[in-house]
Length: 504
Ligand code: AMP
Image 1 (cartoon, rainbow, N blue to C red):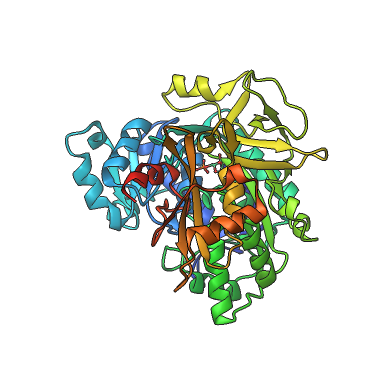
Image 2 (cartoon, rainbow, N blue to C red):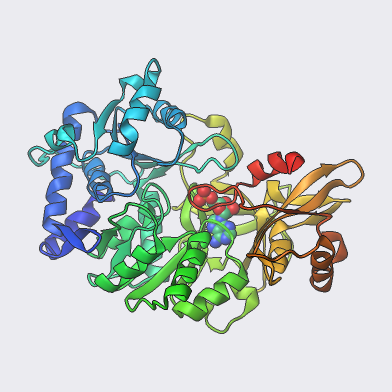
């Protein structure tokens, strides 16, 4: 089914219900949102053809919602661009996607137009979101046919590029349906009294939840700042009913610190969906202590969005460290397995690469048959993540295969060492990476951000590790830094950190 019809159904049933909000202000009802989507669809069809890609380059803004559904009603695919990229990187994505039109925020458009000069991306029509040419595209409602082929491209999902140049995962309407239905069935009983608060980028993590919340006639709330400000987030939880939000783990930590310092306890906060990077057990426990049982974990990737494994709210009760430290159970409609280097499934307890298969899995990378052949084999997506299952089907995620440190022939999973060091009172943040070493192959290096005024010696940290993990896993080097390099989703950029090791 074309995802546009989720909006159509919600608008028939709840035409006067508030659909899109900026901060606490209602901008559009469901009937108005559907009408604007159809008017944009007509504007898009006047300048492009079915199958075209529609690029979006903007910090969070309310127009994302009408642009998604408008593009789908026009039988075009959206290609959102990470708003924090360098203009030259954005141009690369415009070129790669071959988008015929790009909707761009006022903040970005001049630099993007400059960077595109002389490149093939110059042919892409740039439309300033909220500007005069945007208004001109919103004409009469589209009255033509709206195709409903589930295999049609709906979202060209550019990966965050933390492990190399960004690639466009091709997500069809079927893929988006699969993650929408699994979310509503497994995780959240969203209804017309719910609100999706967009704290993470709508171009990626937060945007993936738009169809599920629209399908249930819930509100879309975009903070007036267009950014993530924990104080604003907590205040918005007071103005909207049944709030759910997707947050990367580092965003959860900032929210907890804000709630602890201000004493705010948001009444209407119903779900914090976290994922996209490891959530450490210590942090999760502290956050549950502040916000209660509102946490939902998802494990996925752009290639199988948000829906490989996960933990429901109820799975967080009982304070079981094995469960809290895991990636959860396979999601509805997805087969998940752990395989060895020969591709054969491994027995329970053994660590191998996580693979998955089902309607959630992308059809391939856009214009990149080599990367597609490496990632997809016989319908299985090779995630590049390492993990193991227990008897009950609980998946423990280790690390990405390229992040595993092999020291003296033994595998060391950085997350395990990080979990231990984070329990030390002086450690605020830590990232463990491997550094090439003539004798050991690689050594384990811990790069640490300390809590204010604390100055533990490496020997103290070493003794702490010795009490908690096997000797061979202990870092051989401790480095102290003011901040870790992070992407705009709050993911630590391990590759960058490894490159910086020699100069630290
Ligand atoms: P991206 O495609 O940028 O969303 O990155 C996906 C990657 O983030 C996955 O392949 C995992 O390595 C990591 N990831 C996603 N969800 C989780 C999770 N719940 N716990 C640990 N790592 C995760």
